[in-house]
Image (cartoon, rainbow, N blue to C red; front, side, top):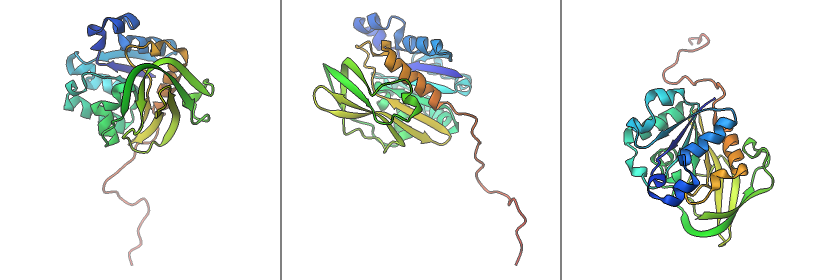
Length: 239
């Protein structure tokens, strides 16, 4: 399976705390454990030509993992539309944390994708809402993070096809933290944790969920629909 990890790679260049937690960038950390899981993984970042997402890269990617936060608007409409079309054509998409506000995710959801948020170093407990789902394989009843950014409802997304995780925060809010969607032939997994100033992507359970999510999102050679004007398969009897 070929996986491309995309990250805007801006916090790492401007925030010393982030660069200490992720010296190879958030994309580098994500790619490292995906490679260890056996995936053929490459990275792409915002400041590369075409944001690193050339037609060749996208066409070769079975799954695209997307992390963004402070530079959503710098992603060109052309690239966002190309990514959207690849998802509709069957590429999997794993959307992490603040990428809920990315152009790609908003285009695919058709909603504003806004929410409540707060940075207060509070505990997050991610409850498994669907223990039968393959994304939760190897995970217990919940994952507990000592410190994370709070996201709270209402989360302005369409009703998920499947709700996989629900988060509770120390301040009292809850949030639909793991949700799946199908668009065209593509599968999308949104997973909430991963604020840049916390070492969330070093957590083995969070890594396991993302590894499972990438595996789930990959297209398994499903048939390509034929649309438009179509000749009959059988002879139509004229009356």
